[in-house]
Length: 141
Image (cartoon, rainbow, N blue to C red; front, side):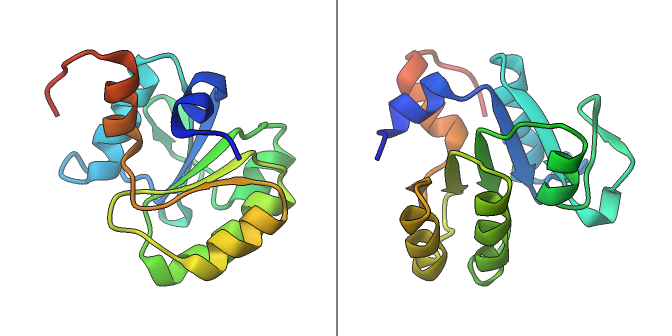
């Protein structure tokens, strides 16, 4: 299992499940930060499928993104803990390298499933906060 710094250093494409265009939502702030730090963001949200968020096409699901030829390194989840298990199954199906559950999100069944399939698993950590620690830069939230 890779460490958080290794995951962040090796990832290039991050699917953000639950990404919203609403500036009040943490998902948009985190995704914007990650995009500014050279990660490709793949928005996944069935409510906005076919639209654009951060200049990227929104997909209804991870399998839809994969079918469009998108290779996903990390699946970053902005969904309730109880909604993570099907996302973990999709992350496995599309060959993602990591299932990442944001701050406040934990699902041990999903973590066990993803881990058994060979994915790295991170729970209850904010990707932006972890990247800030890694890059040792101070940027406002």
